[in-house]
Length: 171
Image (cartoon, rainbow, N blue to C red; front, side, top):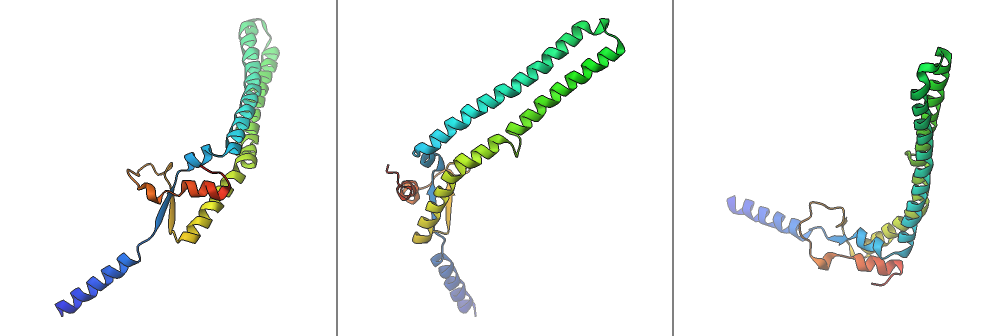
């Protein structure tokens, strides 16, 4: 009985080992650095972000200036004038916050522009990885750049250069 149990256990272990999963790695940072359109998209995003940030800061500075002027002259104002100035300051601060939300919020212009510029590149990379993984029978493809707990991985399972070739970029 023991021999039969050990035989079955050995056979099951062998079957599990024979069905081991195949893994591959990519280095997304490396791949993205090799794609000129990604670098251009990043530069365009940076430029737009600076413009939008300047506009938001200008609105915030207007509110700050209004507040500083209010502080200097509040003692000489009537209650109605103070209330009017306070409301004006609050409205300016609200405008600045709304502008920040318009540009940098979850549904803001920055997110839309990033989606427009960078998503097609990421989608192309994903499709290339998927095609290579399907052809070679990989069960999982892991991004080395985002796998922080990975200590070592053999370079022979890195398919980053293949992905670049599939996308039409040679390295």
